[in-house]
Length: 194
Image (cartoon, rainbow, N blue to C red):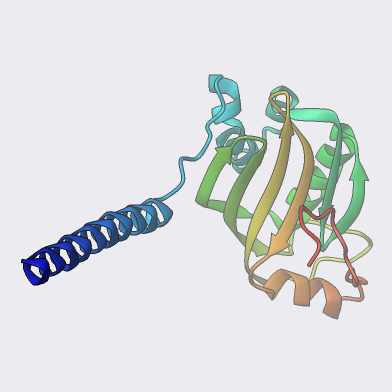
């Protein structure tokens, strides 16, 4: 009888241990599933914020830079390989107007989004330098493409920082070959220092 009780106790202990393991495994499995689910992307509450990235592109592509007044802060800070520390919306518009007149780009939209206080616009410029001088560089008739992303920081529905990153180098190489000094050791504000 004691042996039967002992076997029953061992059997019960095994079932409890297996059940506990199954519950733990199920919990870990569910945690693993939750970790692989895409995180919900916070979206701005108001319609104007949701359209900031698209409005940036449309104004640029149509050369209607006054449309930026509604989505770009008057004290915006902008940076690109071809223009560093451009402070103020009016200066940014002058810089863009000069670029547009010189290179007369056709601008294709690749992607755009806004998530919380961040936005991104990725474009492809089809350019040809035959419209006029740019930063002292006379037109040469050379052309190419430039895939670029605008990394936008947004506060209160307005772009306050606009950084441009080149993904292809036709334009950057062209400007460098024409004598334009390209930025080096660029250190934008970081979210996490590695």
